[in-house]
Length: 119
Image (tube, rainbow, N blue to C red):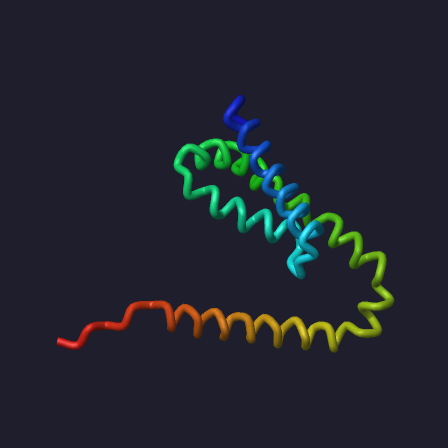
């Protein structure tokens, strides 16, 4: 991290996550706390002065993003029996949900793009 700016950015990231957790639990909202924290961070990034510290904290964290997949890999290895038993159905659900997500995203993008003006 880049010194003080990185520490300030990391503090802001953690405060946003904590605020999201507090909102989620305190108001008993159906959204997870980290999602609410991310939405709060997104709103705060409209403030120009907060962008540089968050970027200073985010860039080193993104460099180590692959470490977050280690627990998932261990979880898969631990539950290989479930994967063997339900693997084909899980694969089908993953493929269908991915295609549905892509189709919905494309339709939303298509609806949000400006229409060409006829001359």
